[in-house]
Length: 161
Figure 1 (cartoon, helix red, strand yellow):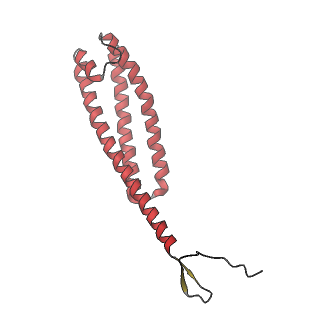
Figure 2: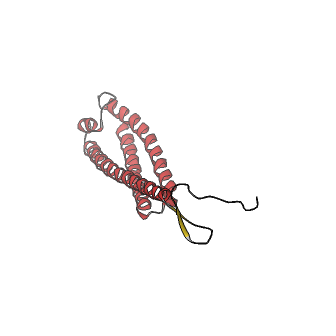
C-alpha cells in the first residue's frame, strides 16, 4: 500500500515540477518581451507553484519513509535505494520517477539561471539609462531654446513672488 501512496505523491510532484517549468518559461517570455508590467504576476505564479512543491515534498518524505519501512530500509532511504529494494513493477516505476526528477530539475535550474541573467541585464540597462539622464538633462531656457543642465539640474521658478 505505501508504494502506491509513494507513487501517487511522486506523480503529483512531477506534475508540479512540470507546472513550475511552464511558469518559468512564461516568466522568461515576459522578461524577453520587455513587458515588465506582467513580471510581478509571473513571479507571483512561480512562487505559488514553489509553495505547492514544498508541501508536496513533505508528503513525499512521509510516503517515502513509510515505503522504506515496508521494504525493510532505513527511513531516510533515497528514491534510488527504494527502487533497488522494491519488487516489480515498482522498481522500474520508481527508477522512472528518479530519472524524470533529475531531468526536470536540470531544466528548471537552467531556466531559472537564464531568467536571473535576463533580470540582471534588464537591471543594468535601467541603471545605465538613469545614469545617462543624470549626466546631462535637456531642458529649455527662457527663450525656448534647448539647454543642457549638467551640474545643477532643473529649477522651478515661481514668478508670483
